[in-house]
Image 1: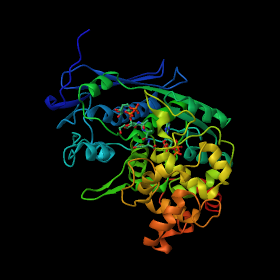
Image 2: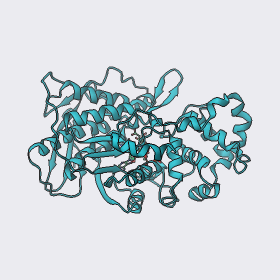
Image 3: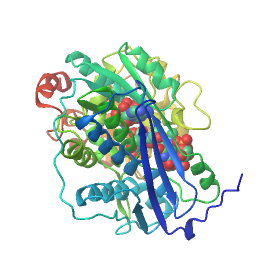
Image 4: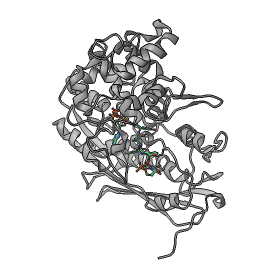
Length: 453
Ligand SMILES: CC(=O)N[C@H]1[C@@H](OP(=O)(O)OP(=O)(O)OC[C@H]2O[C@@H](n3ccc(=O)[nH]c3=O)[C@H](O)[C@@H]2O)O[C@H](CO)[C@@H](O)[C@@H]1O[C@H](C)C(=O)N[C@@H](C)C(=O)N[C@@H](CCC(=O)O)C(=O)O
Ligand SMILES: Nc1ncnc2c1ncn2[C@@H]1O[C@H](COP(=O)(O)OP(=O)(O)OP(=O)(O)O)[C@@H](O)[C@H]1O
């Protein structure tokens, strides 16, 4: 076997070499390379094969496969960030290139900031000027593929869809046992899609590749769109809340959003693209877009069914490496935020029971909570709510006898709250539902009261 070499500074071009889908096995192969280096092959396996594909459905699958190939390339492109991008097998149109420029530019925002790279004007997908045709209506079955991530958000969506009478298949990507347990706990039909990154990527990381966060929700979204066409479903449902559209405000840099591909701009542009260019009746939307994180937390707290199953702690989801012992590490920003967001809406013993400890009564956690409050620090690069949500939740706890003596709450009341405007600390203001979303009108009609009350 030849030894793998990688010099990120010597790379000139990132190549999208080819993409293949084998309908007999359900395996998609996404092939990339740097210059004339070895092929990097990522595989995605959709259960349910063999798939019978012909006519307009086969054409839509090919379009979706290409979109997935182009978006999933971000994991590899980031390793060298070369000036040139080449698509070996097709010429993109301007709209497709513009979507990809946006996904790479913003989706790699945190990566660029942390590595001190300036990506503005650097990412340009090549394109021609051929005219494009609108996607046909495929007559897809009225059915939702609902993405499940093991945390509270997707469980809120799943229960809301169930309540509204929408048929759904709970769907996840990857081999997480925790997500499988949550999915099975729903009692609904499930679909587990496997994904293997090209193993050379980990080797390249070891050899000094650029590394950092990638827009994983964009990749998962493109996988789910391909899966919807294959299993015949007309909706792909995510659970990204309004708060995901707001990033961390960094002094001297501006806004950097860790969760950009969970935000509204991505949902709007990706969802619109799917309907215009892949299948006119395939609808991609986030059911929680009108809601703040606190509104989602309130909704989750109304149901105890998942208490012993769910976890929002991302340390459960590493491809390799250790996982927390009891599903919650208790010290990361997501653990901090979810504990704080649920606290106003749950009896204290229930919440402490879920986490196995009271994070708000641990002196060593002060700095972690300060970052959430945007007090002496910026919002962490994690999927956590806005600073104003954390401040409102903490202010509510400061009025509750069962919480106000805990060290972090006491410190907030003493040192942070006096510097804040009381009017900006209202939880009620954060419960108002927003009108910016892509939820089908008839469904939203049924859910508005359910979410708003
Ligand atoms: C589990 C986790 O949080 N991972 C982030 C972590 O990566 P780490 O190196 O500690 O472990 P791995 O996840 O095992 O990744 C190994 C390497 O592979 C790269 N990689 C992974 C997946 C992929 O699709 N493409 C890749 O290139 C990865 O970059 C590593 O080099 O730190 C990384 C750097 O900051 C993060 O990129 C890892 O985040 C994962 C991609 C991930 O799946 N994270 C989700 C739990 C997550 O952050 N979800 C957000 C949504 C954010 C979004 O932009 O959509 C959420 O919780 O809402
Ligand atoms: N492995 C996965 N497969 C499919 N979808 C996923 C996966 N991981 C996350 N998602 C989806 O991505 C979106 C963002 O994930 P996120 O982690 O915020 O949600 P969650 O796990 O449902 O809740 P929480 O915010 O409490 O962690 C959600 O719609 C979630 O269902």
